[in-house]
Length: 177
Length: 117
Image (cartoon, rainbow over all chains, first blue to last red; front, side, top):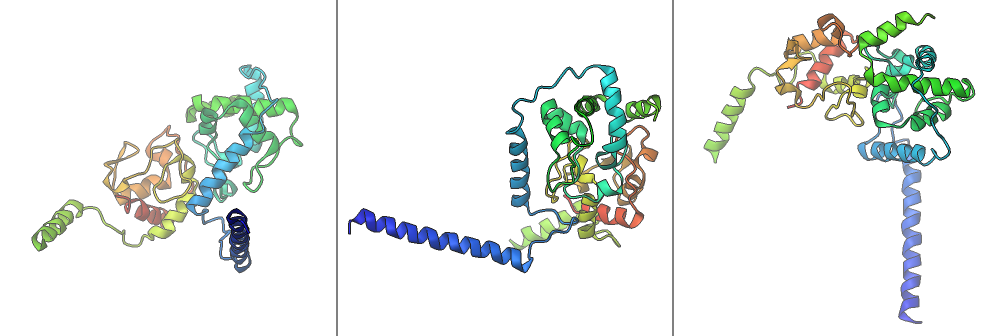
């Protein structure tokens, strides 16, 4: 037997053993229930960071073909505000407005969308609103809101970073229910 | 060596005498969980809480050494509990809403924050 062939056989056997031990270890973690799924305990740091990074990469990889329409029309933002007040503020809160109890009790916590608007593109926010994010509590809205409404929500979210608590309260007063 | 140790202990005792390491009646581990459960982690960077990377409010790092709460109250445990109970009452117009923190939870949260040096 050539030395290379011998090396290859050893390498394959090692990989099978290591892979088998990995699967066995994962099975032990799952079956014993040692990993806590309670919403009062965050993931361990490495698990959280990997999931958070994977989430961001997953959304970013799916934005091809989405192009935001013009979002600066004030009437579009007003339409978005109505929807935001109806369906978003319960979990995400707003400037000076806390989330409701359900939003506070969630893990992961729903993002502060003023920060999201600063950090992400309109297309990114649209994708998340339309498709939701599995196992985070973020619902998909595309079967509840039509295309124009989805973009209206994005148009309002884009304005959040410039809204003070007083400014948000004024929108709330100005735009009737 | 022993003298240096004694000096350090003394120095530490003097420097920190006004900051309790653990507040009486406050459970800092429970307070740490409360920081998730009142959505504080959404808006603040909080040491020791995984995923608490919010930039809406100030980072709560080195809390025990901070002088003021929200720039308006001296940073004492009592005033922190007062602030947590209803921020807009203390500082009208603040973006930090009243999150409905109970007094017991506020003491636990204060206990956690004052453990951050």
